[in-house]
Length: 214
Image (cartoon, rainbow, N blue to C red):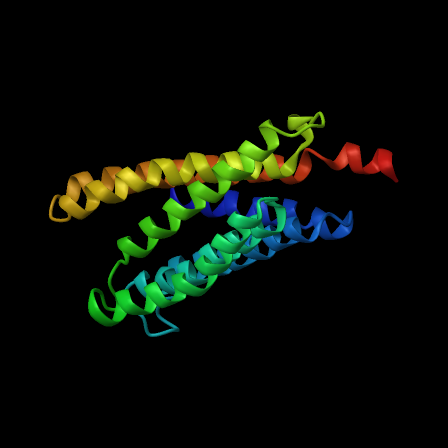
């Protein structure tokens, strides 16, 4: 399953490169950069722990989340219209790194799984994505959703984050039940595959529209 997941992540990054070739907006290029970081993270976490003298991949993922959630927040800050939400995202960009540091100073070590950081990040990403979808659905102009990359990215993020939150909550209470942990982690990988597959469509769906404009 992990090899399928990593393959889908790599494909999603390669497809996202079209954002540079066809001059997509900056916020879509930002997602492409995040996908590049994701690919590097997954390769290191799964194949290069020994060269980095790591006993587990927890430190790799813990550092990744410090990059992932601020970049996603910055992405939504670019596309959300509401000034209040823009300011809220600005505060998130400042406070989330602070929260990350506090968690690792007082709750977890870097080589332990930081579920609190992920749950906090997921919660805010759900809020930001939901706000963006609300603005899309209440827009005065007609939007062709099948060709709207930002719509599909928001849907993918809400879908995955809403599923990941309860799963992480269960893992926090059943950390000694190894069979259940493996099953839940497998579900998370399947959800990841679905999310990155939607990302692939998000970057490719507007190619014909872009060619027409050219």
